[in-house]
Amino acid sequence: MKLKSRRASGTRHGWRAACGVATVEEDGREQPDPVDRRRDASLAARGPTESKNSTRSSAKPDDFQMYYVFREDVELKIAGESSAFMNFQPDPFMKGRSIMGGPVGKLVSHLAKALNFTWYPVRPADGTFGSKMSNGSWSGVMGLVNRGVGFSIEGLVLLETKQGIYSFICYVREADMGFGPLLMSLERSEGVDFGDTLMFFNFKVMSGRGSPELNPWGFLYPLTPMVWLGLFVALVCVWLASVLLVNHALRSTWFDRVVRQFTTCLRVLLRQDIPKGFSHGREMTLVGSWMMVTMIVIMGYSSTLVSLLAARNIPQPIQSLSDLVHSDNVVILKPNSGSTTYILSSTSGIYKELGDLRLVNRMDFIKSKDRDTALDTLVRGGLHSFYDVDFSLSELISDDFSKLGRCDFYLSRESSLARPASVGVTPGSAILPALNHRIHDVLAAGLFDYWMAQAIRNSTICRKAPNTITVRAPLSLKVCWGMFTVWAVGLLLALLTFSLEIVAANAVKGRAPPSPENLE
Image: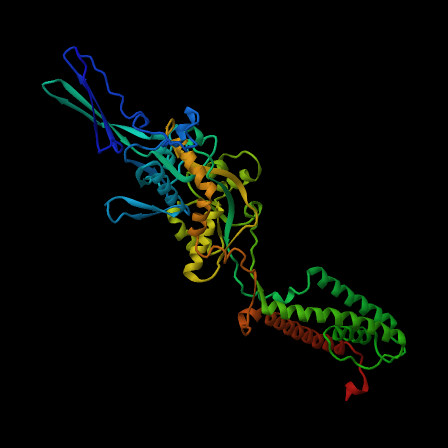
């Protein structure tokens, strides 16, 4: 019996959905039609236009593949997810569709014009770029591109006519290629075919800038703890030396001499006047040398304190991945992304230490579409940090500056996890060589770098924002309460000492032997 086969398509050119039609005649034999073999058979191509002056006419036959273009205007699905490289807006002319913008959107539009195809973006249901799951399948953008043409059993339709029984098997196409750009890795190469390198990802840490408010204990900062200790030790040494060198012929008790010498040394340190009574040159030399030392230290302390009160430092402690690991901040990663998969699967080094933060509840996973909310509620408070591509983080900082007019975030100086990224196509797709050729032209012309530079507004303002600012404002009690605390503690100690002196004097007076004055 003669076998008949037909093909039905969901659109004019058969790229959105395709159904294979097989005819079964009286002998029962069935021959299904090979439907959309990853759409490579539908890729009608033509070589470059040859002319007398053409330099491509002498190219090898294999070289012409890179110049292929679609002979008919076909429609492709481009998979992607919201990021700094691409953004999505509703299509005003087509309900249910979106328009892709950003550097990647401009790149895809350029490729569509060069290869003669129309396109529209599709987004994964889980809102991620995708990773390999435990069952071997892929999620996110990677899954859409990996599956390419998906077969649905609900799409099997049997139609009985006089000519025979026709079986319609519908293949719903999910995506033809995926952009992120997708981070390239050995594991991901099993799911899609990557094009040539489009750019390199460099990952950095983004954290909230500290508050420029003064520390109430900032009056202790002009001198380091070792200088404070050395000053105290010097005070004790000068005091003891003055006690030993004092003129013992003076009519005073030993206790009075000890106290008088200590108060003299302390008054010199506090830049107060000193009593007269130095009768020997050795005493004057000792006090004069102590006065010289204290004058230099106190003058340096005063000038540094004035600078600290006028110029306030903004702390930026996290400058590397190691600083992030050893801090108390919670790291925020993208779920089911190539970088997250690498970090969580690392077995040694700093990336293993970063991945182990999830064991101590110091790791959160937030999708790209929810990053603006996390920026305001988590990162701005200073307790969370993003770890992502530097371009994406710069885009977040620039957008925040455009809204508020200030730089509330900073990037770490150290970059890490440098990885190539490119476009991914369905495995075995014949369009890849043509894509690579056009991508090379875009990179050679510097177009992609130009599109990336134009995508970030105010990109350089916060890049080198000063970490020290000058404040011209009166000091408030919130800033000075530390000094008042020291003053109050000093008054309490003075009162306690005065009370002990009264108690001690009364006790000594009570034990004194009777005298004519007491008897009267």
